[in-house]
Image (cartoon, rainbow over all chains, first blue to last red; front, side):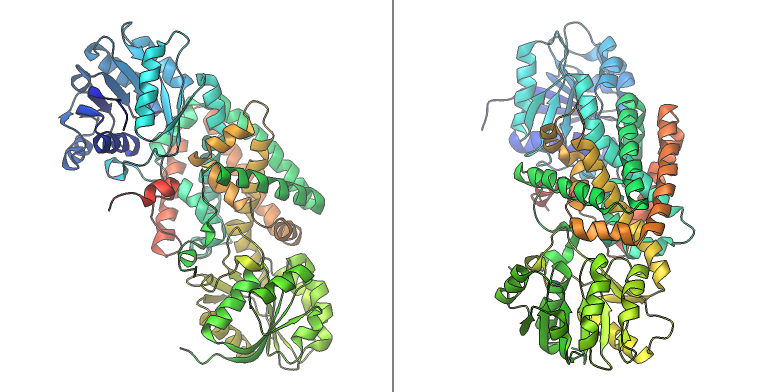
Length: 310
Length: 310
């Protein structure tokens, strides 16, 4: 147990991340009240059916009144509008945070709207699944994962510590860095992989010589893993691309350069170059497993592996 | 039960695929004798310790004597040498097949060595994990997966039917197509995904602004899935690249064109184009799940998802 507790938490946006926060807060008793608001009436209704909060509000400004902690979980392109909307309702001393996958853009959009007496501390739980919506959330999503906080230079250390304690209470590990560095890190570990995955699925769909049914039948040989990434929420990912443009374009340029080098090695039959690359990439995999960020289970086998005798 | 049975099966090469065949043959009683040969003495010894066969041979030509079915499971670059080595020992009427991920090259390498009275029928079980070696195999690897046979135009239909029945007996579904078409299909569903995965892992490793430890910590956000592919056997994948060059270069060219289009849309802030692509890729994901080639479980969550209450 820990002593993190808020009288009232407001969740603006109740998709995969918002609803997972709601589950985690409830499961661990971190708040007396959880006020929920989201733009879509159908989603708000569904959140009520799922019992995710203690009150439900059509207008975000109504949800944030008297809240000690406000967490905005919307596609990053909507951050500015939400900040403008909630600003008049924010309680002095409240902590306002978000969960967006890009941080410089969120700061630029939200900070100008924040009243002086509010603690605005951007955040990003690096966790998720390929599913979206209020039904997709679960209480343990953040366990063992990292949440990155990107406090502004003038942030109040006590407020940052309190937000950190909140994320730790829902099972997350917490790291702090500046927004620009966050955006570079995420561009390579998350944004580029998703863009590449979307791209290859698009390429496969457009082929004339290989049918879509063939792509589906034989997808277990590698393609399948890309389709999972490429099934993620399109609005969220459109916004990520538009709001972390510089870092993404830099990573894409490097990726394409490296791919041209690899392509040339294939064309000229340079087996040594291929072997060198294919060998050194194994080491990172081992490190990820050692760091507890994935398991060593032979996941390609999926069902088959589950049936593997002990 | 089915009536597929061979007096003697020879397995040349006993890595992930060879050892999975051995387990499956044993589990289902498909042969009286299973003779195993592989180039590495240590691997052959290990195969013996695992009890994968009934006899073990330093020389492949000794293993294939009197065998009714010979399955060559070696990196595709070694196919020609193995074919030359086993040719003198092959029994008239024997079926010789392989499991290589490229087929035109295997045909070109092996066919010239095959005695006229032998049935050479190339094959490719589209199944695997990111692990390799004789310890990685398991009996159910092929269940629900597809095996592609690429018989030559003059193949004996009875021999093809017998090989098909063998793969069905180990749980696989079977499809036939010509070698050139196989190579195009696999280039997009398997070879390109692996090359892209190796490439992005290499790009990430070479960054100056983001440390390797950051890449590892935050890998759950997408990168992780690529590292699994990029942990596959480097010799096997070097050989695939060298032996399916034309089809791979064609797919790489298309992929790069599409990526340039996407990159331009990001640079110019064309959200509609991004949204369109990110939406249509979801449909393929659904089809793959409907076809039983993956599950709908939210795999990004990994451990966390396993703890999700029902």
